[in-house]
Length: 324
Image 1: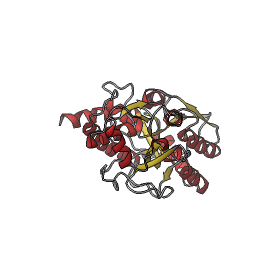
Image 2 (image 1 turned 90 degrees about the vertical axis):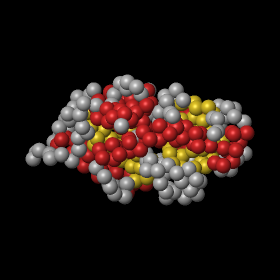
Image 3 (image 1 turned 30 degrees about the horizontal axis):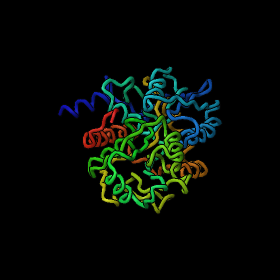
Image 4 (image 1 turned 180 degrees about the vertical axis):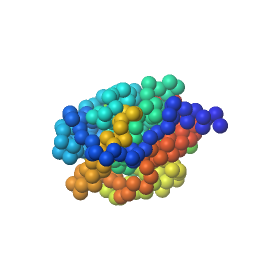
């Protein structure tokens, strides 16, 4: 009961999440100045590239430039806080992955809560991959775990930030197998991948699009997805390898400031959805390692709340902290 109460406090703060499908005004809203798409990861990563594709397509639909800005730090909470404090007019919105609210769940006193943001729409599903350096001479997850268990504490793994999905999943994996692997958090996946290529770490978590760009240097041995990804059919899921992850899922989505008028939120959601349904955009998302949505099964706010509960269970199992 205490854990659920804490979860509700982190998620809800002082108010409930509002649905972007609320009744809009009769007059279609307009955007009167350039929009700012805030991304919590450094330039050069696949999330940044995906945001730029979305922004380029969204701009002519809204009649205004859409400028992508990176604001890194605190596992994404710097960017989330910036958007939460922005003017509630829809001109500033966040393009993020589910990793940000995981950091919020892990923080005793987060600078921003998910309830400070207004869900707009889901962009895509994200398959988190786990890759190992080919220099290790192992070919699969079992081989890597055998190697690290024979050499406790001598190997390290990189994540795209403390409290992110990769960090949580690896700590669960460590608890289940008894493997001792040192965690090295980064400000995004791009620097983590670069350090693996440079031989500074032995394994890394990240988006599939990023991890599959260097097949000579790293091999993706598993993906945290309910099923094999269409664009990466040879990569097994953790479920197939004997590590059931339940209903855990990761996604990309958009948020804006609370108190943004429902008509503006609906207009932004409708235009972003239209962009994400474009065939060339869907192809680009696949190239980045993201799975375009075939259908929106749940309201985005419902998905956010349900997944937060599932990830809180994983945090408890892995005994994950921001320092672990």
